[in-house]
Length: 103
Image (cartoon, rainbow, N blue to C red):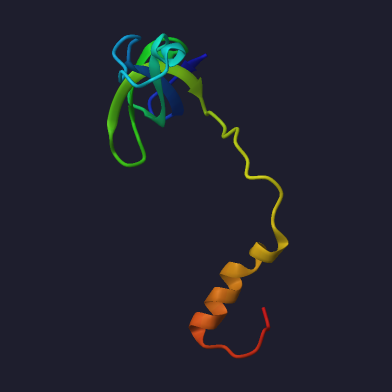
């Protein structure tokens, strides 16, 4: 698969190689590289595994190995907490100075 200019992509790059990490880091961690994952918009074309230049949403330019095209978020925050669902609406009501509990 090939990314084209403007595609939303994820890159990886090595920040520190084994042996370059802080001395207080445990030995098993010392033995592996510290890698960074970063998402942004492709500024060049590349295939998966090739080097690519991206621009992040904050405007930072970065270079790394293309790891994904249109990557999805894989984390979650669990089930919604019912008591928290109405907080935004309730806060806006309070800030507007509305007295009733109508939503």
